[in-house]
Image (cartoon, rainbow, N blue to C red):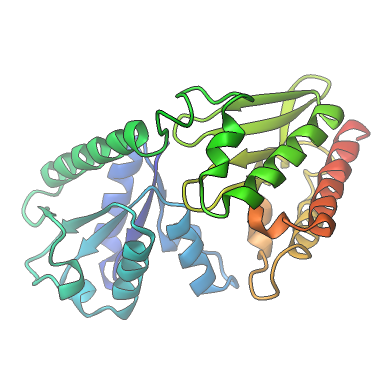
Length: 290
């Protein structure tokens, strides 16, 4: 499901919650600070990660948003990432210069009707992006395979290093996991899986995100499987992943209930890559010997 980041003033929380619920009812995943940031996490990092992972940003615009320094920062960061932005106008308020060229949807008198129009606009924009932007015809088919996936990764930012890491992990997974599945309805990806007694579990994925090719460990999937049903075990995995990150970019403990994602460029040295393989190998060993 497409992921929507909600930018808003905290003074508009009640109306924002209504908008959030309407987006969820329409089938979107929604990132909004009062649902997605836990006590004790680092606010700036969580906001940045929320926008990084979003397919589009919806700005709840009001007089309070007009005066909000955080709304301004979130909008400017979204522009920097060149992500689609939509404005839900919930009360008459002049648009600031940094969003003056963004078409808004009037939700001031009819929130339900306005949101219906806004949701249609988001779906139209994202559907076009899915079919046009992420699958260059000359580089990769709509169905990623071993034959075209790595060529696609190579054309992305830091493509040479990313392709090398992605292929090395693929060859390693061929010998250490039970199945590798290529796919991705939006971004090309492959998923390395292991067979357990009654299920098959993805232990890591490689995602060819257009701006930052990355690898992901789905810790949220493990939360019902021993020994990772204990949060302390999932946090232990996070701590090992943090050893591979720059000192100012560590995961916080709440990522133990999510899918922590590492840019492939961070694994472009032999030492870092082998360290990541060892993390995956330890996960597989724990899953198989629970």
